Image (cartoon, rainbow, N blue to C red; front, side, top):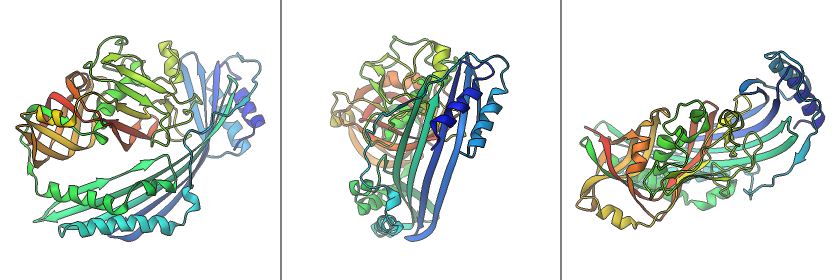
Length: 459
C-alpha cells in the first residue's frame, strides 16, 4: 500500500517539530451494498475509500490530519501539515521500521468480491419471498447484502510496520406487517468477519420467516403499561444493554477525562457478583473481531468485570498516557479520516449458572424482552433508554401475551447491580456502534438475564 521508505519519511517529517510519537494509518477499502425491495433489486452500490491519517503526540497533546490520497506527495504534505501545529526541535533522531506479521485468526473461505452479484441477490430475494409468504398481513419486504474488504497499514515512530485485511459480510432482512392503517416492522441482521460462507450459516427462508413473524406478532400486540418491574432480557442482541449502558463508560475515552460513572472504581464491586463482562476481539470470525487494533496493538480478550469486580478499562494509546496505563488493543476508527480512540469489539456478559426456565419462573409479573432495539446513553451519568422491538408480559412465571411500545429506562451502574440471575446460553448479535471515531462493527451478547427491577416505559 505504502513503501517503508515513504512511511519512514512521513514519520520523520511528522516528528520534526518536537513530537515524541508519530503514527501513519493508511487505508484502502472496497465495499458493496445491494438493496432489494419487495423481492426486486432496487440498487447496487460500490464504493472505494482510500487515504492516510497521520497523528502525533507531545505528551498528552494530540494533533491529527488526513489526506484522501495515497500518492507520496499527499502523504508527505499531510505529515508536514500536522507537524506545523507544534514548534520545537526533533526529539527522535532515527526510526527503524520493522515489519511485523501478526497472522490472521479469522480465515476467509470465499471473498465476496469473487462471487457473482446474482448469487447474493438470489439469496436475499429468497429470504424476502419467504417473509412475504409468511402471512397475508406482510405488506412489504426489504433486504440487503453488505460486503466490506478493509485493508490497512499502520506504522509508528516506535518501529512498528504492520498490515491487516478485514473482510466482513452481512445480510439484512426486514418485513412490514400492516392492518387497519397500522404498521409494525420485524428484522434480522446476521453478520460476521466472513466471506460468502456466511450464507451457509443461515437458511434464507428461516431469516425471512423470523423477520415476518416478529412484525405480525407486534402488529397484534397491545401497548404495555409503564411501571417498575422485573425484566428478563433474552440472549444475543439483548447484550446491547450492557454495551450501551456500561460498555461506553468503561472506554478510556470517557474514563481518562473523568466523564464516566466508573472513574476510580478499579478493584471495587460495580456489579452483582453473578456478572462477568468481557470484551474480546479475538473470537474467530466474529463481526467485531480484529487481528490488530487501529494503532497496531494485537487484539486480546479483556475481562472488564469479573464476578462483579471492575478489573480493567478498554484503553488506547493516547488515553493510556493520560491514565498511566498500557493499551488493551482497543483503539478503533471508522476510516483514515478519524482519529482512533478506545472502542469495543465483541462485548458480552459471560455465561452463568441459572437455567432459562428458572429465570422466567421466578418472575410473577414483569417483561420478557425477546428482542432489543436501539437506544442511547450518557457515558458520564450512565443514564440510558432502549426500545424493545419484541416483548411479552410474564405472568405467574409464564411468558404470555405480546406487548408493544416498551422501553427500558435506567442507569448503567444500577442495572448491572440488579442483574441477579444469569443464564447459561450465550449468543451474540451484530451492530454498528457510533462514537467520536466514527461507526464501527461490534458484537453484543449475553445469556438470558434477569434484572430484579427496572423502569419500563410504555403507556
